[in-house]
Image (cartoon, one colour):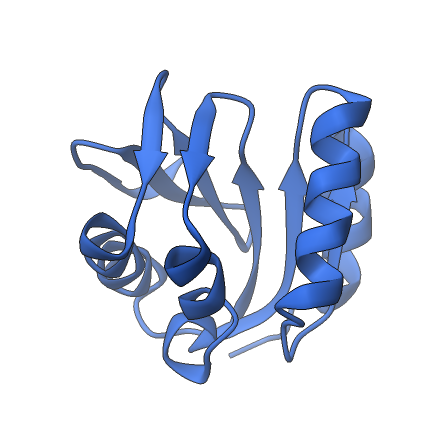
Length: 129
């Protein structure tokens, strides 16, 4: 069941079973101007509780270097314990793994093509707040 659901121009964000979910809308192009409000919406939805996040990138068209660098900052990672990125193909997987090596996040992060496996992996990072 979805708790604390929020939708903006770029994504749907909610908490389900202690995990924050972000699903980017079709055709989404992330840049430094729209990622900061998305992060703020994620913090609102999480109610400032530390939790893992599942980021569904399958609809994402692109993001720029500044956006990817920002997502690896303490500001963007605030209230997160781990992040799983859901992608749809091996090319995206290669690119996301490259991103994780360049803009190294401070928290555990992993790329998945299977949602159930991503959620299973994230379960180990749930905390009782």
